[in-house]
Image 1 (cartoon, rainbow, N blue to C red):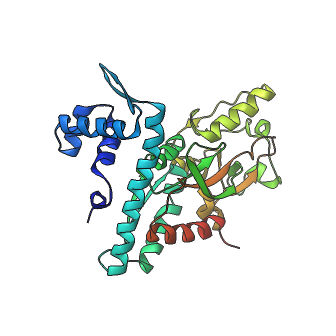
Image 2 (spheres, rainbow, N blue to C red):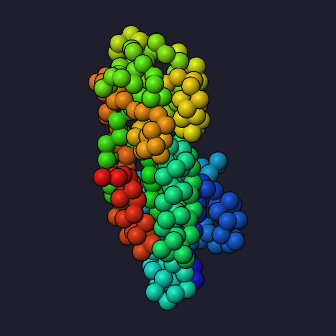
Image 3 (cartoon, rainbow, N blue to C red):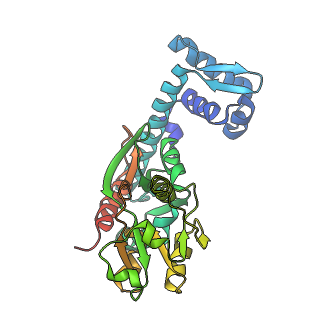
Length: 303
């Protein structure tokens, strides 16, 4: 059963045109003639008494009224999907699908183990995990591509509800026998004396570091720059030098004592949280809600 049965055709077509900005492309996606799409959009505009799109030679752009309707239509589409999944679960037809958007830091260890443990209890549940840069995670949630987002965040996002939040200060990672490991905390100035592996400038954690360095007039020259969290952890494990991370990204290595983590004492290095995000005002399917319960427990970590 598809969400089409619980959602008006006009709203489906409206979403398709809004997503593509083109009647031609939307008609191809919906397998409906462009003229039929145009009539449906015109009928919606007549019912509402407002224009939903600005028509331009290069495409169709939402008006302010169109933006409002799009937010409503996306929630209606997701609520219809949630209802069908919940009904399917009750009937024993299927247990649903959890669509998760997350960043590399969570995808290496936490998310795979979560999926495996959850499926041991709920074998019918499937997962669609999308790994992307942190900045793109809220967009996937906002557009209904993902049910939930798991990422680091420093600021609120439009139309995004935060279901769970916990602090994620930046930590310095090193081998247990490194000279800085004897300290209770370290500074970026102290770290600058050693080989460093850092994430690229576009990442939240690197932006935090660069702001602090700019205020201090400090120049860091990393030996390795990578957007792959596991690669930077291997740099530390192989004796390359220091790196930076949240506790959760390196939890498996910290637990077995392969590396140690020390707080970075510079002001501003704790201004970041882990967030579990969902579309504001949206009801979540039963399977997604159950997965969220396990996710919250795992994020907190061992007592």
